Image (tube, rainbow, N blue to C red; front, side, top):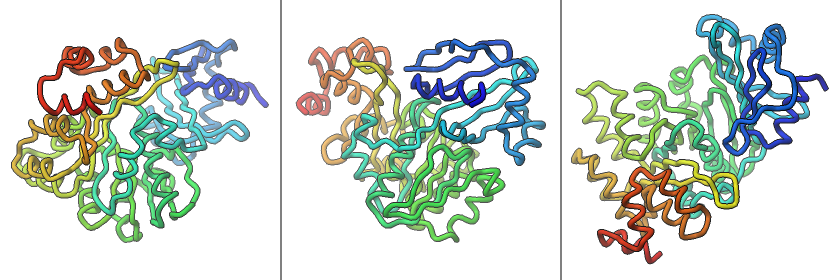
Length: 366
């Protein structure tokens, strides 16, 4: 095993989520959200060039020469699979590698609201959107949704990813995974053809622009389940981000289409667990009759209130409600909840037993 393989092996043994490499610096590992130096010499500039030659797929080389950055997958034999981001800083090469777990965790193992996510994953059509900041666990939750379908339903699932992060094995379902740049030229090209490939479920790694979202809308409107991710800090903000893809003259039409095709938006943040590690706090928006009417009438400013009052059978919850439950269940401490809340004053009142409307009183009794 050469030095690079030993480095990767050490990272996996330390439970690192990410590995940072640049010439002249000791490798850094991100373990439990903290960066830690690894006790081994860092690569030289020549060794960095050799690593790039070793890892960078041939079909990405022209792109890297042009863009000075590339995302791709790397399989280290005997160690594991890694998602790699190659870029330049101060004219020199730098690499960040994320270890991709080969076994896809269940909802319960991830600390997600399992019964709600199972009901969401079991739908027959519509868009399921995973939102959150970078590093919030969106890709893992997305994979767990796909794996739940794979284990419980006879479906044809096609994934479009850049790059492939989790490898699925056919179980009840048949799954085809297409990597952008390797199996298809672009998301646009793949989305133009995916409907003719007879899918039941389409997983799109990330919504990036108006064209990809319109293709997802069309697929959902024609009876398919579409799962995808988006960078946003809340469910209502995710809707705003989508509408911002489009010129103002088209937004009313798109808003109405979303109201018809949307199934759910899950937005998550990672919070420090009482016993170490992290747990997801998940905001959940379900497209019930009230939510669909808000989209139809253009009252998107009321989505947050609809989420807050949408518990019960719809199992909706705000971030504060999710954090409240985690504190009351003894899974996180109050200070961590307040630090991660977008409305810590309200959450502090809730934790003290003060609720300002009936929906919060109902939440307190659950």
